[in-house]
Figure (cartoon, helix red, strand yellow):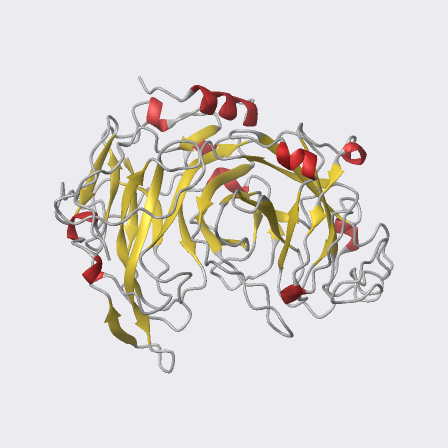
Length: 496
């Protein structure tokens, strides 16, 4: 039977009152309740040149246990036990074999398991190089580093490209029985009843969300791709996040899409959206790379859950992320606005507590202290208020901190509860209720609902503007250490 760290057990139960449902403790089978989907604690920590199997999962690559589940000479794990419908789970380091002007090119690297996760073991994605696109004609350029896609092929730092930022590997989570046949497009049973899908991700400290300045949007740093009902138009949806690196970020997907592959780039609320997922992936942004290799991206505590508290603002606030940097005791918040046009200016307020926040007790929660950031004209404020930077894009972000007393009370596994309000307006006038002196000035902190009815929908937005949207964050059980030195095929540490 799977043993769960006692602190972690308390953490999971505190976060989710629903029955736990983990494929790791159920012979890799799906179940019907929401809860932990995958936390990697069952997977043995990689200590040699070949990642190893666990009780319920088997490592596979083009050179080890090659069952064809890891596509394109890549690597990953498949469930040993088939699901009730005859299919296997599997997840893999996915190759991008083509070069596109918007996706760049291939990424080199491998997956393994580290003990230095958010709440135990974690999936580690190590990037060693890539095949960048030629920006003038989208043709593939020269390989930067040695082409490799599995841990077994890595022999040392001589294979690593160290000349600059590169790499944006995709990690896919799928269901299939044999490579080359159609994937199973039935929804994940584990997502039944869920309205939240979340995970914790650690990005390298050099990960930035942009330079800011005039006409420079807030830059995405992480994206989730969700595949839903394949019979519908635009079944591949994009979920965008904007927090930086250097700490564990919790990315929360709600029942809202930030655009899809049909060309519909609108952010829109879709009830029961998450309950139709049959495949998903994670990737870093920008496509040109977030750090200089070798660097690692770590993933832990992937969960489907249900936040049953209502009503919440499901219209103008979506897909929240919270990041905590233990080294500086600072935080970041990101979210997506509903609108992106010349008049799409908005103002928000974030508060926190150490118990769940509701609309009723919002007034008792503590406003976060906003930290100034000149890149995006963010003011230092003690009232938790911040503005969207650029109206033509949906991304919203701000750095902040807790009070000194509350910061000093933080400890591994402690849960902090956050809630956000869209305070742009309480009615359909163009004047915000509490404009702040950000980039737009005091008179431009909201949306002109009354004069731009073609672009803004007050009928939908008006009832939810007084409501919160919330997220909880659990501090990591251990401090994240720097990237471990790579090892050669014999398992010996390779020093630069």
